[in-house]
Image 1 (cartoon, rainbow, N blue to C red):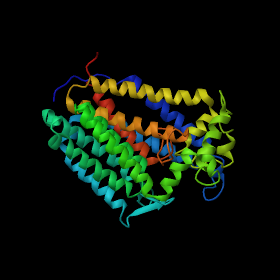
Image 2: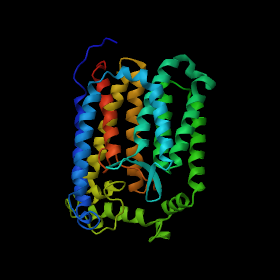
Image 3: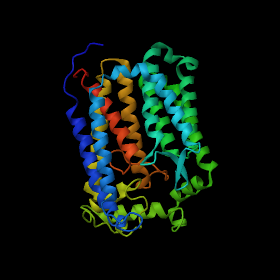
Image 4: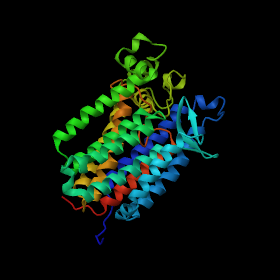
Length: 368
């Protein structure tokens, strides 16, 4: 393919780098106090880890920004098989468990969360497949059913870890890509109804998910148990007021009332220490990212690029919506990180890899 390159979308790049910078600061602010105690004994433990993650992720993003995105099409089937292989490996003795979930593969010097890479691999495959099918997308058996099967297999493997939040994010991403490809609204409505029913079935299939769901409806009913996360998250956000308590001055994060403060509930720390204004800034940066990302998708030079950009933006946006929704008690609790901001190597590196592909596509987008 011969296309004229230009500079990548600068606003998109700045939004990502601002979110990444805020994340590094907030990871340190939220974790420094309790990292002083065993087993870490180092207030800079999580800060150093996140800096290393960023120093790996940013060069990966730059590399993907320069790598011709259309070459990914030839690897799409291999990437899908790799995704399934990695998701299956997690469920074998090679997988390692934390807090009752087996989502990682232990590499000795570090751990690797395959679902993060699998999401990007599956997005590339779906974008390739949908761009080839074109008119067949209106036929249910050929244009929709294969993707429903792909949703079921990938979501089933991720649910087995168990990781409901990531499964919902991946299924929602494929759903949006089908919409962007031109699938009939009536068909998508049926798929959406089946999807909601499947999520409810998954919630009530496990006792801990059912407890979390009822705690979401009434957290005060079990304040020391299932409602603990929600109540402390809301108290953290509420105590921040308009301007916040100041960096490192959050009482809930500092004195260990707020669980998973540097990962799943980091937005609650932002609300407490940076206040309403800080929380709104983060949300506005995500809105800016989504706007510029979908603009890239709309102005992309070919269907594959458009669908690929839509998938990457949708996946990151849905993850952010779910995370902030959980922290603000707008959604039931599910363990999922805030993109670019939460502590986590695998998540950050592969999210930045996806952004690199998105910036790559923006270099060929047609101005409108």
